[in-house]
Image (cartoon, rainbow, N blue to C red; front, top):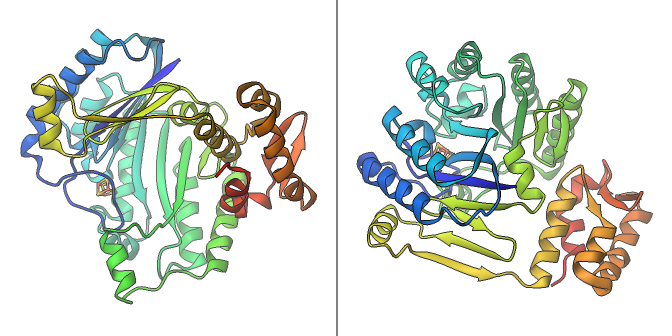
Length: 374
Ligand code: SF4
């Protein structure tokens, strides 16, 4: 099994909190798509296994036009062994999801749509520089449902400056009322080089208090699980049978090929990443010498990934697998460091699987770093 990630590096405007590689000048879209198709051809041998998931992320993939998608799908289906029932996801922004655009998307191989909503509160949306209102986001989801998308995910954000528990609760209730299959919810992170970070450093905004963040996270878990969602990863909640297969594959050590500028790839032993520049990406692909950097993963790098990805998910860490893959020393290291968290009921060890408990999930970063090899 393998996955393909496609990075579409265009956005109509820039959101205040975002540090993804993306450009607001869309004039390079045509040559970018041609280069992307050429890269697919060049790297056709790389998956080596049937491709079960394809994910168009960004940036804003919903900025592309019909002919762009047609060219990309032609290239993907010609050069990669994509299985007939592969999960094929597009990330989209609500303001792009018009009747016409959704009609176009529903005629393409997409069978999952991930809508970047973030909030249904108009003041929050303005603060985040999103390009839609809460009502427009609701209407976009309903339109997608009318166009027969029955595997819909939305993104939400919490821990915003000034956000109250009441607003967060309303956002969650609105998400539940939409009758969607999946919700990803992230706490705001102040990434360097973003406008949000500069506002914070200038003292113009104040982060939420730590206790409020914790309460919001608890409300997120309690509310969504009470409404039939399963928290299968720290930030991801899906209905039974509707977990993101693409993201689950990342957490289960599946290989993936990343196409497009700044896209990352993983082959089981190496991580590589394409140059984070649209022009350099296009030029290097056209010259037949793609700009890509690569690092070989050591046993310890792989062990750390195993801990990190295992503990983030409900599947946990399989201790027998850990011993088989990483040897006695790292198995012992993990167990020794896990013990005090097991004693504190922050980790549980059951049937050879090590998992975070409900209490442990709130301090997961600290626990993971203790179990990692430095
Ligand atoms: S959050 Fe999404 S829409 Fe906003 S700038 Fe980042 S990639 Fe673009």
